Image (cartoon, rainbow, N blue to C red; front, top):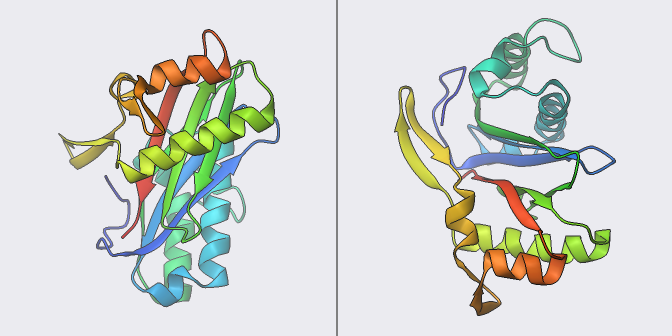
Length: 204
């Protein structure tokens, strides 16, 4: 995980998702701050949602690249916008991680927990109706959260989260352990259905 402002890790913050209306592209963003009061404030909610929409539209591939991009709403860079926000809020803010998936031939689906501290982004290949896909995606997202799927690897700038699709789809399906995740996806979403990518973020 990395940051562009040096603020310390804290148990406070939000995980935010943003999806395009056609369901073919989505983004997930994890941002922490220095107090629970700020994390629940309207200004922080608005800022993180704007930042996630920026990730959706501008497609940065890393937190560092995001920091240097032009800010979509007020001018300057994203880093400069965050510095203004920090000055106004009087507290530190740190972007932990981001993910963005584009899937023109399938669906990107996101779910954030009601506590706003956890979220999952999935990219699925499937030719089924939206209701069925939503049910299966929700079950898979729940499994990813409960089993804390994902690994930490040491990168040049410190620990980095990685998400191995093959390792996840080889696991037993939580609701039917006699089948793997890959087998369940094909059974419920049709032949050739599969998970293309996923990300899981949490704060706190």
